[in-house]
Amino acid sequence: MSRSDKFTPLTKKEYYSDFLMNFDMNPVTGILARTTNEDAIKQSLKNLILTNMTERPYSPLTGSRINSLMFDPIDPFTMDNIKTEIRQTITNNEPRVNIIDIFVKPSLDQNTYIVNIIFSVINIPQEIRLEIFLQRVR
Image 1 (cartoon, rainbow, N blue to C red):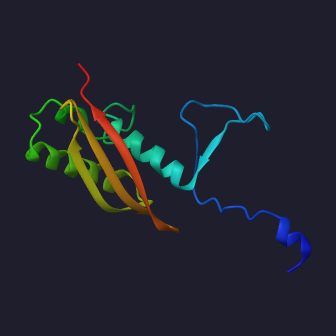
Image 2: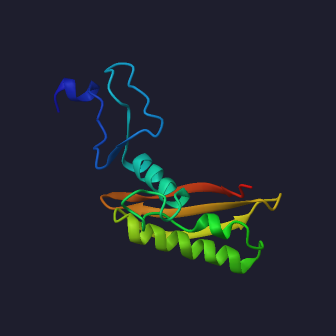
């Protein structure tokens, strides 16, 4: 190993990348800032789950029916329906993800669901956890 290798930081390999949702500019380069690997997948999953079916033009089957489940009674059946809908949405629209488990529980105020998705990404060996808060909108 040469001396320069000891002090050169190892860069993380980028498998997946995407633009940030707020389209921030990178202050150094002046181009659009990006998110990579796990963070890009998390952003994609959150967008898929929170997008209603038929909301995207020319892609009516992209998204989920989570918003229609938000006003159902808070009980184990509704939580199971939310879990099934999330699993189906991810399976149909995000081929880079292998779902390990999904946990859904109501919050203390009974107006929000807390969803924890545990998944792995193709080419990245570790498990990743994503927490999403699903809230009723009047």
